Image 1 (cartoon, rainbow, N blue to C red):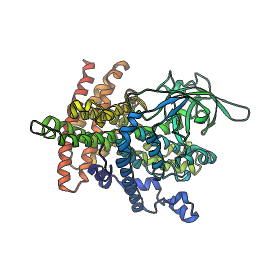
Image 2 (cartoon, rainbow, N blue to C red; image 1 turned 120 degrees about the vertical axis):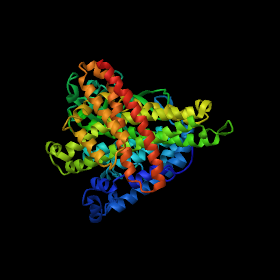
Image 3 (cartoon, rainbow, N blue to C red; image 1 turned 30 degrees about the horizontal axis):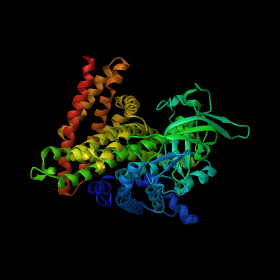
Image 4 (tube, rainbow, N blue to C red; image 1 turned 45 degrees about the horizontal axis):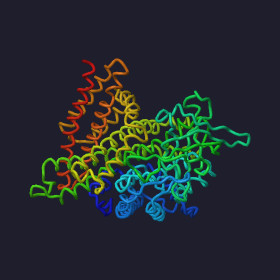
Length: 583
């Protein structure tokens, strides 16, 4: 893979950071109006709050420096071992997972950078970055290596304990994750129940001494075994109520990997250095997180929104890697007397990867912005001791959480699907060489495929989002107001953008006219595609407004125009598919 700084030597990613993110608002939402954590450091001298910014400029400088360091580490170090650890893979011997030595070495090296706990609260020793920065970090990490990116992303699940755990749990578990001493895993899926979490069968029984013991089996648990000498903490969804009690009988437990049995690891198409474990609980000790019965409705929701944003960010991360590898190859590979980059068909594939990458970036960062708009405020209210019912009634939290729930599904769906397309095009650009393991695009293609499956399959997200789209696009719906607000930020919308929004409106009318639910389910993905492409097109044209450099603006306008042509053609086909069911 290319060895350079994956932030400073990626012009479009830098451009997006510098001019397209409203950092004033993001920083204020994250730190609060009074920058309370900095004030706490000044008052107490507590080293955990030493990095808390005193003002917006300080925060932005910290973010930029962090991205430069992250870009250098992943671009010059992780990227250079990704092929090696992929080929070496994992071994399962005597009930333990054996990791490639290079992976263990790079993990220890990354621990020393201080960048590992980017989303964990300062109270637990983390950096407490905004969701917008989570997205930037993940885009850089996923470009270098998807497996290692997963390890670091999962570790940051410790933010859930920092938010809902007791002081003792924060110190015992979350703080150890902040230092990289322990890792985290999300243990939801079971052999017979994948996305159908309402029917989880793993049980948790409360003993007379107040402790819980868990029994059951979880499958497809990434990093469930820990990493080398570093154990994992499994955030385990288990049933404390009746077996047929649905979501209300589920709770989340903190279970040490030393208290479970790793029955085996999966042999997978890709992400070869990320362990996907089968975990067996046999009278395994567990500590409850928060209250009984709120595992699925409250705590798991917090985990899945974080992981879905990470999955969305992984899309443009992998696509950027594919683009830069293809750009290098296409300019060096000569056929018919010229570099293949000059062949129109190849140039079109390169162009498509590039514009899709930027569209995915904009959608991911917009989703992160919406999360930032309410979540830090909500956590501050929770920490202040306000009752949950009162917090939920706040308009800012209601609006933000509802919009974020919809956008995380749309972004996860769109970015994972389009990243697959980009990875496939990357193989095609490399021709026969791309189908061999001699080039990194083969691994990129294999690794990209998982993204449409984990954290909820694409089909699950279509099902989740469809109701939200229909309700949100009612005459006074939240999503309609949001779309209208986006449109108002564009002084002169292009004719193609207006055509696309009209296709979206017509598709909604046609979809609502479908009588049977089965008919709607058959074509629901078409509505999802139209929605996602309308949203990304809006964000793309909104981005143009902020570009002042004329040379850059001309290039972005050209790419945006091509993107809108793609979107309009695809949306028309999807609308036709919906309307054909009515015929």
